[in-house]
Length: 346
Image (cartoon, rainbow, N blue to C red; front, side):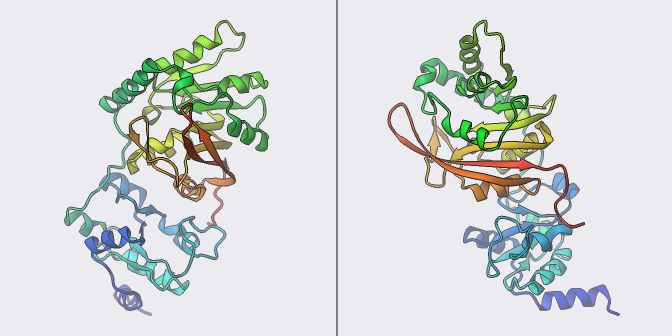
């Protein structure tokens, strides 16, 4: 028999240098992965460490073993530097020792945990959804102004035919009676293309009233009208479930980790237990900004990492979009299926 103090002492003896919070943040800038294993309640109450992966303690070994079928997309070899973070630096030491036994020789933990991190005055992001108000209104004004200044066929993201989106819909064999939501669809032609193909339940969500007005004006007195939802995606509460989520060029505008986390929350709330998501974003070699706003750039692996365990990457593609002005914009497209069961061992 051993005391817990003895177990902790043995665990820490097996670890390489346990960095202070400041050292861990500097290591993160040079490629180390910070892994937050605190409970959901602790993160909700105390906040998030920007850029840290969130992996629950009860699935840590499965998610960090490079040979595991359930490994996290960011874990790819045994030589990565992994720095675990718990609340005070005790649980994380024991967990890091387990990763050492898996062969992850550079796994360690942050000395003092999140309590020490916060005491050093390092940045903490709120874990709560951004409130409605000024930010949502500013987004609406920004996109309304663009559609006031330009016709829909003059904006940089215009496509006369959404080829890649339709190809993915076909490849995934989405049923014509599926409930579809096109988030940030605005004046895009995708929704109408789906209706023309026989889809009967298509919704478009956008923050811009002017963009949606272009869409509804084109519909005229058509027998099947689109379901139009004017709302900021980050503050939207879905009132129903959808079988297909489509997003072309919305996600990449969310720079803040809290906004990206909120995006995933809305996605999960909007989708049926078994459903599909198609997401298009600027590729890793794509533009750094769009319409005067900075953007994030992604590969399919980064998208899979963001969406997390509940989604499985089933298709990925690259598109070279040509703007009406002739500029090339590389896009990453990724399709995911959602399952209504936990795929990790109990």
